[in-house]
Length: 384
Figure 1 (cartoon, rainbow, N blue to C red):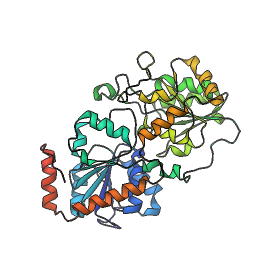
Figure 2: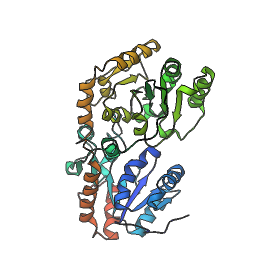
Figure 3: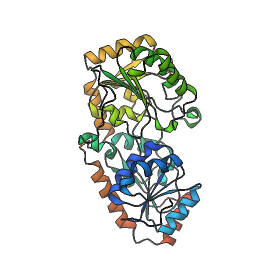
Figure 4: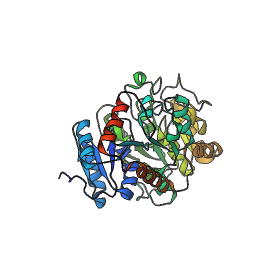
């Protein structure tokens, strides 16, 4: 059913969500407090919100083109548009809230200067943006924290465990396979460990311990290629009882159940530090990548755990980390570097910051908003 324009809106605020379902939780934490209008070109996002947030009676529009989202925003008189990505509709005043914190180079993007407010998870993201040099008006940058994990900190996010056999559980959470990574300059040799390590980890872990494989939501449950191969491999080894593969917008519920996490170059590495448990890094390019002291490197976080370079490393690394935790201090330091005030109150700070910004622009008329965005398009960036 198509929602009516302006239905159940507390403030004239909009949200534009693309890419994948992992971008939904940061938006919905704001939506449940402020209401508004959600727009997306992604059918799966549209369906996921309506199915999983039905209790909020969300106003969600599925559009087939960006200009249609802009028309909805204009007709609704929206003043502020909240984003987790970089594709914009060029209406209203743009607020960036991010969907994760990682060593990838997403935030080192010239499009960052298009946002009128940039709400930062922590000092790490602030340093990366400032180092890139695209954002000249640093007053746009506001340290908020990480609302996405408030429920974890406040001990609210939990589900029934996937295993009840008493064995330790390993969570494997590889990032998505970015075929265009080299062209996009995210990382010189890619970020995902899945093609190299997926089957190896199943083979080593499943006979001894429980294994949860949490695929990146950008995969859209595409069971072709390596994903289908891993499912077939699990069946061929006969370890279905010890391996669970999951697709979900919220990884925290699986983190709660794990004793160790294995990942690569991903935002989940920093998120995992909230649980204060060991992490192991599956190196997606063993001949090229090493842990780095450079805070702008794509392997800066690897200082917080053991790194896998060859298949024989897997079992000893897990056994070693189950027995002792040698990286706790550095994990704690990186947690507080990545996340501003991990106190469970980041949502409050973010909502208050949006409300404060909204008060500054709520009286602006449609002509002023249209001209303001036109100036953005032609490359003139003006402080609000």
